[in-house]
Amino acid sequence: DGGITQSPKYLFRKEGQNVTLSCEQNLNHDAMYWYRQDPGQGLRLIYYSQIVNDFQKGDIAEGYSVSREKKESFPLTVTSAQKNPTAFYLCASSTRQGEAFFGQGTRLTVV
Amino acid sequence: EDQVTQSPEALRLQEGESSSLNCSYTVSGLRGLFWYRQDPGKGPEFLFTLYSAGEEKEKERLKATLTKKESFLHITAPKPEDSATYLCAVTGANSKLTFGKGITLSVRP
Image (tube, rainbow over all chains, first blue to last red; front, side, top):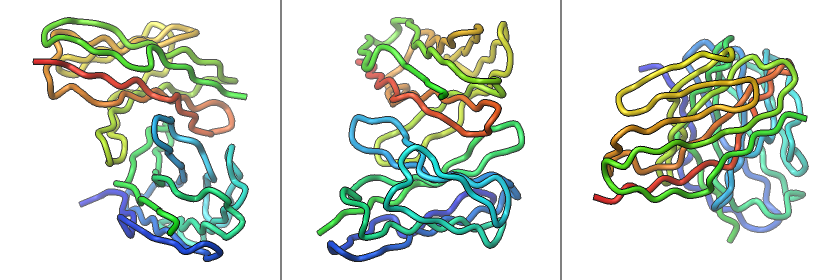
């Protein structure tokens, strides 16, 4: 089946640790996105990539990093510099017309 | 900077009571306006794309319309299973996908 796969579904991080969230798509989409969602909030853009080996900062990129070495994969690293990382993280890919399709999300909790 | 504002923040309807959700936007070079449905703890599910003013799309009890400044999601005779958060998003000339905060819809039986 075609789609977006995020893993893990739940992730616990100790303070001061870096963690990496996985996002894989088999829809052959060029564009991919990472969003953060907090309770009662909309989706805020962290990073996006329109082609392999290129990506742009979104509205809240501080404390996060990404790579885009393959078309299918767009991993997100939450670094120790991110002061409030507890949130629901969503990955998406989109068609050329801009229609985005989302994974089921990763819930990150700092313990 | 692209901006999307959705209203109201929350809406409670009785089953069968039709209503509309509003999405106002400002964007440089609109490429598309999108509506999504999100259930708690899950990723958003794509509903509609609108590309130009005057365009309309329908799916079951939902109908989306677009003007140059706003979009409406009309819900006709809603059922309890329509309860969810409805998100509006736009893509502009920079290909950045910008979302509003969403509207939480509750439909009582």
